[in-house]
Image (cartoon, rainbow, N blue to C red; front, side, top):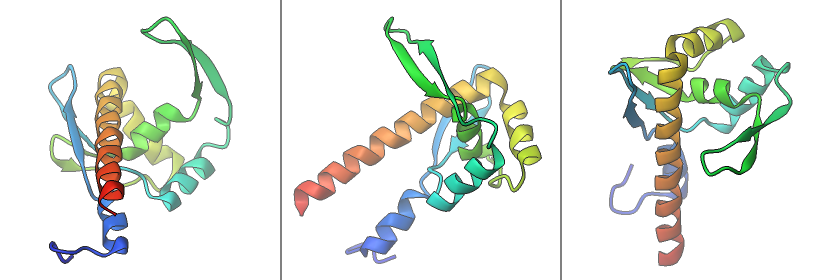
Length: 132
């Protein structure tokens, strides 16, 4: 990648390589990355039974509609735990294994890391749009 003037394709690919890390309450460091569109499609294929959503009360007291697939989508975005690489799951069994390994503490940390990743990407995209 040309650091001085990356192409649009290089910038798109780079967003899927960026890893955000967050420690969980058990002391593990959970690394996540943005899922590629093809991985999102594979995730949907692995979880056809989770096509609904539920209403949850947020910390702000407001009700939020959340996809039933969201916890497994977060698990699928995990790419490392304590620097040990976690490959994208190929089967529902592999996805469930990552989900179970994370448990509530790891899932919360992965969720926070994904939120940071999304926020950081939005800020970078806004800056790039402003330049152009």
